[in-house]
Image (cartoon, rainbow, N blue to C red; front, side, top):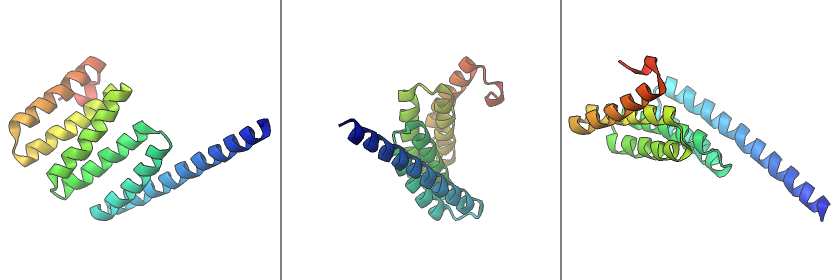
Length: 143
């Protein structure tokens, strides 16, 4: 029985390591596509990376991929999809207690609403982001 458990754990560790490596490869492909302004391709690579990270329980890293996807949709002018992805990233960051990332995601949401002409929502989200940055003493994030 112990031998089966050890084999199972070894296989599991190998699978997680493989998923992590593959996720990093997709992330690198996404970054390259982003540099070349191929946002649609970048979105697909970020999604592939994000799904692997989600499957291995790396919620914080998954949220970062959602943020990247949001940024790509923002660049494409698809503001509804940008907000959707930023909001999912924000929910995960709040669940994990990652205030620094929450501030970043709120800021991004605010910037999308600003671009969209929804200034009340922009101000609301930017103020929340500012409050968190001030609480954390992040002077570089305070304008």
